[in-house]
Length: 341
Image (cartoon, rainbow, N blue to C red):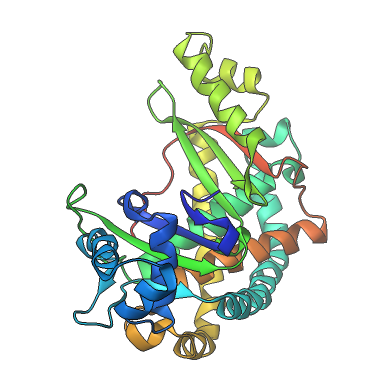
């Protein structure tokens, strides 16, 4: 579950970047932000929430301090992308179509992906289908494609600066949707630093199952931390064996990153071809009326939906397996590509 949510009302928010907006995003404030997106005035907020005008202003003050609400007077507006239920469904449907185009592009290049995999030491232990959810889903479609977008900068320029009292250097994208949790973006990566230089436990997959946490994924990460803290982890290979996950050393990681960057740059051409339609789509959303220059923030959300759709299409084609636990993991040497947004 997202750290900022109001499940009874279907409100979910998530960030991408550096900072901590969750510290000020309470369920009540999410409802106020959703109402502001719909055009509510301060008087409307007070009436709808059953609060005094003074209480409404007090609730909005931390949002203003975090640069999440803008505008003076009686009609403040969210300073980040918010989407109604109808808008969320529309964007998700569009992203499903483009996600299938991303998957088709990768399937066309699958022989080259298989050839690159055969060059890895890992290939002697596991077929590509067993690890492609991580190597393709995470390394190419998630982190690799986001990095390609950040390097290109046209569709997704650097995330806006959103300094707050506790995070003066904060810079992140943020989106709040009315809908299902998965419509934030179904899959994502999490990295746990290990006590050996350059080594991490990477997990990739669903953070949640419905509105509940993905407890199997959480348990694996907790087991890794406990083993390391107790001194039972041994060396990276011993920890990987203990956790029952693959070990990806520096040479394999470097070779795969070279392939991932090449494939991600190729996928970027799909988005460039879709750019006119994507900009029209954003222009038809309510957020574009008060955030006309914030296409990049919308697109970061859109990309998370599209690459998830691509992953599902690839899994449906049979080129890799997503296990029932809906996540995968590896003990990986060499830090992930540094985020540029």
